[in-house]
Picture 1 (spheres, rainbow, N blue to C red):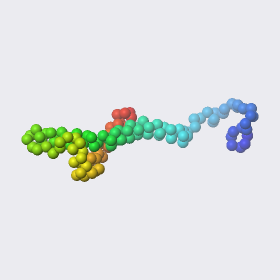
Picture 2 (cartoon, rainbow, N blue to C red):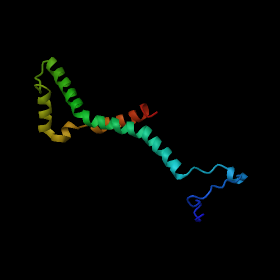
Picture 3 (cartoon, one colour):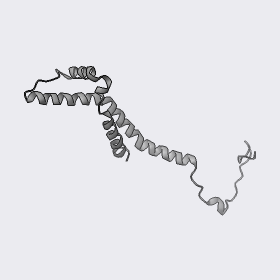
Picture 4 (cartoon, rainbow, N blue to C red):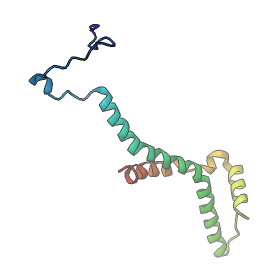
Length: 123
């Protein structure tokens, strides 16, 4: 034995009867706790992040859709429409406020999907 608890290579294994004190359950090691925490993080965190990323990608399209729906409502009531189509809506939004205007209000959608997907898919 090299003093570290492992017998040298090639030496015969010696088995001894375990004492009563050896039979007690050892406290969970750091690896076991880390694996458990990783499993929980994977179970709840990955769906939450996936939902949040989906909102980040789809938000400009959703915002454009809502702006066009509101524009159509105004046209139905006799008002002049602001947009000619969805490309015009995106271009007008970009001219008015750039990147920020197309992602206006995204933080609420990200927060909603983060918690919603963690609870719905994670559990």
